[in-house]
Image (tube, rainbow over the protein chains, first blue to last red):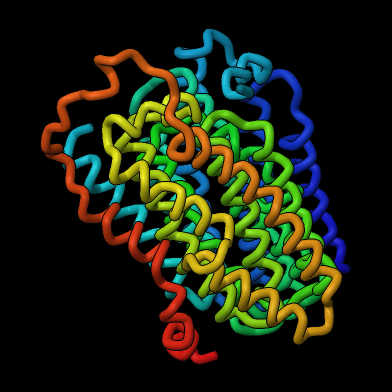
Length: 98
Length: 348
């Protein structure tokens, strides 16, 4: 595994661990999601360098566009959660247990 | 909801799934999955009820994480093998990651924990879209990456059938019952997917009308708990008589249609020389059958005590269309004699 590949993989996996083990705030989960997307963006950007080909340069832009849409949807849901539940804390999301 | 916005959202939902169906590049498949996730988010939270918003948030986080993991697995596969094409075989490690990501997308055990809660927070129509349409895109991707890591797939399948059976046993809320039913059925589909993707497709094609029928029946009765179903014998006696057929078809009893996929799957598993897995799956179907039977017991097999005015209500003609429910109920109860033709159509 090349150093580049290792760096990108560890960045993604650290973000995923942060997403899985976040404990207090919904916002930290969204931030970790963004970190994962950033790692993927860098991976796709370096892919065209890896291949010495410019044909795959649009892939990171497309991915970035979708990740931006997703981030804005996540923030809208954070605002909605803050409006209905009062806080942005994860422990407030306990209405659906029964 | 504003009809223009509703049509944009529903068409985007269709676009997302179609994009995933039609793609041969992993990036495009990922985009299709993202589009369908983003399109269903406003549909889920349209009522701005705290439970709906909570369900939407949980759905969003899990689906976004799963989609990111899918893209990561396909990027890793591209770095290792140089291939972005879906039709090419995956390297072992990204393939396992991709399988777990698709399992998270679909709601297979052991990553199924979001599904009962999310389905519980939604109204019945959106829950129906979530249970049927949203399963199509990850299912197709899963079919296309087979055969991969047989022990992982068997583990996912058996765990899903067992969790779907045991998890639903203590539920009184209908949406959670349907969530566990979905987990169990997807477990059956995954079990056979590694050997014969056409049979998995058959199981999905039979599962969708059955789930559609149950959601429509619950919508007609406007009921979300088992207890509220008990009054339906006075409101819609014909529907009350048909519901056990649909529920037992979900349970997989002959001579109803739901028996067809289970029979074919058990036959295929036996042919592939794993009779132990087949036995465990068949026994776990018994657990699911118990709670389907409990729902039909409360609804049809017993008449609940009621005051006299409620037992003879005026049965007025409904303005809601009953044709979809009629068609799907017929399909989900009476398709078994057509089994040879269905199997021939799926080129088995």
